[in-house]
Image (cartoon, rainbow, N blue to C red; front, top):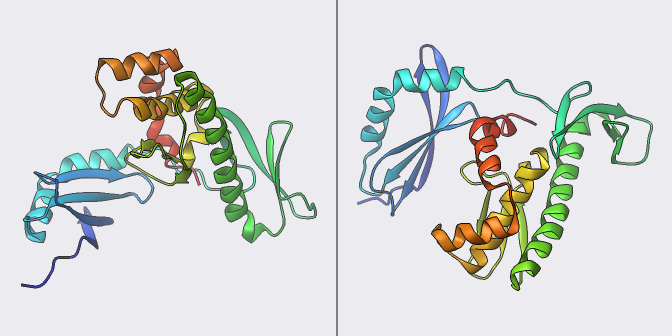
Length: 236
């Protein structure tokens, strides 16, 4: 029998709209899981290893009305282009193109300024946001870890969709670079959450006690992410 691919990209017709579909197989999955991907205006289908592609597409068809509602409710996209406004640590900054400057990317009077060719602006701004996110996440993680008397491993930033952060067994932390777009109290909570996992690998009472020791914003930040987290994936 031929080996099954772990990932496959398809397209689904939703009332005449071509919706990108990513099929992902997971040996630990016990059922088919459907999730809207706000970055692609598409969906991700996670399948148990034994499930067939036909089963997955049949399940997707059965969720036709739900999927249409979810996609229609996605916030508007905010591309990286001059005149657009993006949040940086929750504070709005208008993107300004400075073609003749030689400063790369910098903050000035409520604006995020980008030098160089216009064609390179999106990449330059994205690279700068990732660099800022990594530096600020690493600094805050070190402070929070010191409060618990533990050490942080390697810090990485990626463009994850399902998680804002994660903690490896060696204390390395991974975060979504998009945390740099969130309000400061949300940024602090995500860092506190992952640092607490260095000590407690579960989400039990002792874990939440550690999070609350590191930040007073747990409930407030979780409420914000539930209400507005999807907006962050529509930026850039």
